[in-house]
Image 1: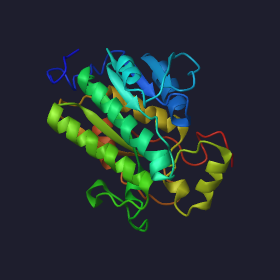
Image 2: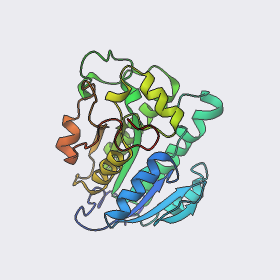
Image 3: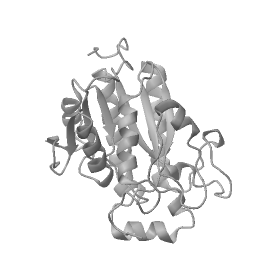
Length: 263
């Protein structure tokens, strides 16, 4: 691993070999799916969460607001997938700024200090939710946020771009589609006119993040990439760049790949 401030080996993630991967928020809905897929692929997975991770992961109980704990967990990792955050719109001061901004900084800076070759940050399709959904939304359309949660996700993309450019890190910001975390959350998706078209299944999420870990990317490369499953009715999100960079191809269409509502 490189020393603080050095960028010599950043981005050289040895895509063909098993890796040591730290997953923050490993006990959450996305985290469980990601850890399951990575373990099945043969990677050594470390789950960092305030709740002890289950399954075939090495559990690290900690909080992303504890800078020392984050730094210790990040040492000697080949990749870090940062999922821990408040996952919905909420009060900015009371609920969002600490995990989604300060916690984000702790993870990014720990990855920088320890020379982690691949950092994957979690963004959201909500960063483009201000665009009309009548046309296909592309990366070139740029962000258009409509709430403070999405604003924190846009900041995650911005800090990722800056760390890649300034420190030579290899970073992907994952603009995740709508992954239901509970039955009420799935019912909200069904009530949305575009929910089943921007749906992301648990299994497709696992495949996407595995591709993020294994993809060959050079040092200093930043990519913001959409991640959804197949649309049920109409394509709303352009996945062409995701396919080009990661060779990711979604396999599920609503309601496949989720446990809460069938049929």
